Length: 151
Image (cartoon, rainbow, N blue to C red):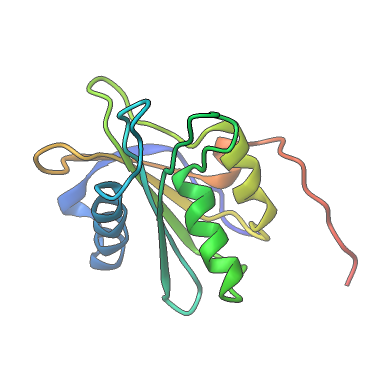
C-alpha cells in the first residue's frame, strides 16, 4: 500500500530537480496547444518508473466532443509506446486566481493506470512559476472506478 499523499502548496524553488523538470516539460508543451475556441492552453507531463517523460497538450475541435485534453494526450502517447505505469504527473495551465486541475474524464483516465497513487503537480504558468499545488491521483478522484484483477 502506498503512502497517503497530503495536498499542499509549495514553492517551485523548494522542489527537487526531477519534479522541476517534469513541471517544465508540462509548461513547454502547453505552448503547443491547439485551442482556437477556448484560447485556454493546457500542458501535461507524465513520468514512468524508468524516468521517461511523455507530454501532451489540449487539442480542440469545433465539435467540442472530440476535443482531447492534455492529460489524455500524454497518457495516450505513453500507452501507444508500451508504458502503462506512472510515478508522477504535472499539469500546467493559467487561471489567475486558482490552479487548474484535470477534468473528471481525465481523472478517471488517470485512475485507469494508477495501480498505486502518484503525485500530481498543478502549476500556473505565469511569467515564472511560483507556487505548486501538490496533490495526487487518488486525492483528485477518491472514489474512481477501478477494476482490480486477482494475480
